[in-house]
Image 1 (tube, rainbow, N blue to C red):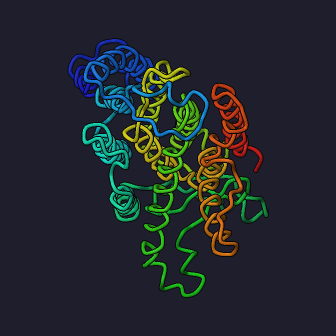
Image 2 (image 1 turned 180 degrees about the vertical axis):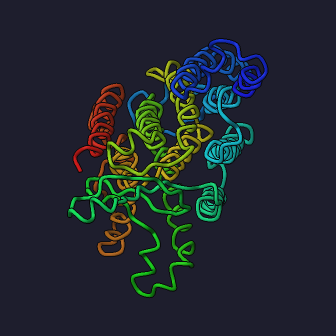
Length: 410
């Protein structure tokens, strides 16, 4: 809203300096600081209110050191993250931007799913929370919405660089060096670590029959659903010890914000030979606000945690990360960038499958890990949770650096 007010004042009075808010970098910086302040001050109020209402976490005894001490710690702290992100976004972003709309819808959608789960756990005293199939249904519904918008909305475009040659250059056999950009609606994405880095999902069908590429949405939308479901559940599984999910997520979102800023800038996109995506830079304001919200929440979530984010936070943050990657056409980099989420997911899947296999074969289920997800395995080995979080965070920073330098490795 403030953006539009300043835009109106600029057109009406043309005051000096009034056009500064047109710069994405300035608005992103303000959004980060504002969200951080909201999370720090509003967060304390939320924690005090939750404690007053005695809406604390009910902890199951899993035999982990220090686990029972967490009993009664306020949960549903994801509300802090949601509020601290949306307030700066609504104030500073261009709300008509299709990418901002998708991110706001994602945050509200997954926030509602997560809040419902936490509400059932806390208020209804049902530890199981929202039924798993309903939770997955919410994630699938969001995936269908995002996939449909990406595929069918004509505002979702990229600009492709086209080489041209003058008659003189053609006559003298010189290589063309003139370029112009043409805007095109497409679902192309970016392949990491390769020079010819554009990949068109239409290839998945057109290699068999060229006429089939018009039906590529049948493949594309399920892929989007899979990405959103996987990353959202990965973030949810990672939220098992103090500060782990918030810390790793802040690094991931900051990296995606940088990639969005580069992809939305024609100069940097051309220099780095990556896809130029018009209007995607506006997502940097939302991303900066989310980074500030996560850091502000981390203030209260580090060991020993004063509040847990609950599914309201973890499912929402995971969903937003997935949508940020999809809209910036960097979703194929997620296995590296979200490596922590990936190994947490895989540890659970491997543990369950191996247990069922050995039970079927030997009559007694066996385990690969002492406990899943993976961070609990290290707790069982005797590592303090602060050490686990610190080392996972170091790994996450290294993964983020790998993704960033992949832009030049090509």
